[in-house]
Image (cartoon, rainbow, N blue to C red; front, side, top):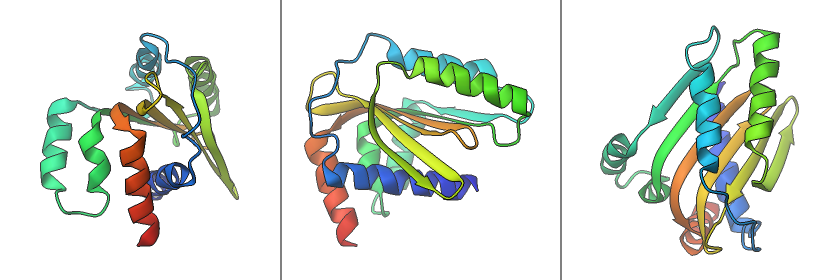
Length: 169
């Protein structure tokens, strides 16, 4: 399920960019907003039924080198840090706590797209402090709950090119 979720999220993220949902001006990013989502991920790291991973800039650099020439590797050059949390196997009380904390941490982000497919759901939130580049992309599934946080300097024009190329394949 998690592999499908990540693959599904990346495909939808690329589709969002292809459709131009992020081409409109977006609310200015507040200072340190990503740290609130990272705090949620770190807060629940190690809890029963919760899996999380934080991939720093060093490992992202290795991932860029290792994936050179692979499908989807274009976006990696713009991502500096990534964090993933999945609470699919957590108890109902813990899931509710995580969901509540995530909702608070996401206040002020721009909702780019929301997708529902049967019982599965996904929402992509972004921040564009400069207006021409995405600094944070947060992919959230409330049905699990799960969150993928991508931090970097992702120029909208480059993301649109990546999305265009992906839609042609």
